[in-house]
Length: 482
Image (tube, rainbow, N blue to C red; front, side, top):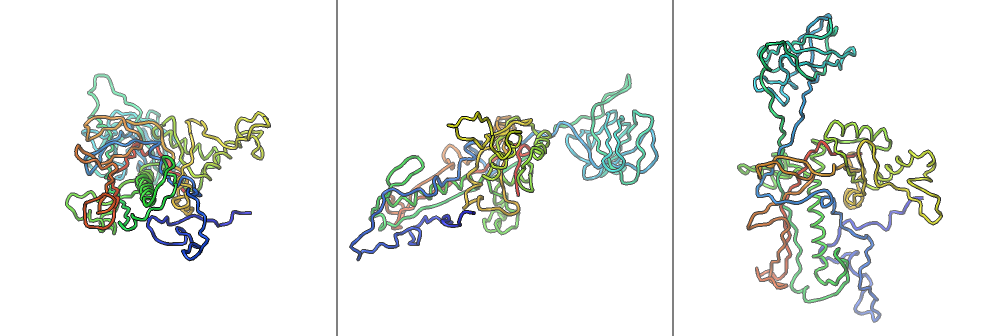
């Protein structure tokens, strides 16, 4: 038996004083001598409706005074070339290898050469297309002039002969050291550090609540939960909900934002693309950055240890952060619980999750807070992914079930400060200066409710923020998609 679809949920909260079936008493009639009894306190049938808290848990906020935020991250220390080819031929003591144009200029690079491989470096050559085999040799020479777009290098093998090469064979090559004759000159050139530069721009968020001066004269008290405690509000009830909704948007915008492609409808509408020196519309949210520069698990939730072993293997190749937190929806959380429970040989049928000492007074714990397998993984439900009016109502291809976030902080070069700084992997930068703080602005305009700023017969409560999220080390994040 399944749950009935009703009662459902309010898809459109009524922030304005509009008489609809969901925000007024349908049987109220002034001609009726029997007025309905009403409760002073609203019943919270949806509990705490706010979905924000994710960035407050894992990140921090700090000011920025520019339209553009830039930082650099360390690249790989070592270089590997893939898709390297050589001409077909019999096994020989040396071979000439060609680096494809697409891979010819990785960093770090040599000050004198356009690629990292230099004479006298020792290399490992592993055949990836063709007959299996691994060979080691020393680089005799490097040719960057004959075909600059596809440089070549000659390898002398340590074995008597190298591989028997067929047309179409490909090799993966990496450097493991060097070897020189006695009394020879030093290494040709030097390698420059591999720095990756990233940037993001803040977006401006606004909202407003308005109530006419006439409506302000009619006071009706309702007891509501303000989030910080219980209190009485009158016409400002909708203002409070506007504020809560704006608070949620401050977080969800940082999670969902995408940059607008120049010339797109959004770029044209917002008018940034045509401005000289404009940085364009949109911003790079967490989901966008992880999808572009991080790791993506697709095809449903990982439900077996072998699936998580694949994730762990990928993390080994990245930053190898010791502690990680998975923010997930309810189903993903159940899948992890079932996976961990299955590791107990006495847990057939799910009767022995966790530590169970047969105490008749103890409730059976069918859940886990985390596990360790190579790294520490903690899991926590993310309300944003469960809320039916947000991502909790999506289940199609590309819908998101969870996000793995590394814990702690990382060191980056902050171009504003001009020095290395410790930053959380996720943090928000808001526009601020000595005279203007745009982290969270609110002000009242109009001619009612004490405001004296215009001849508008209303009171308007305005909200504004200008911010961007910085996702550092996106290669350490994992996005779990359907």
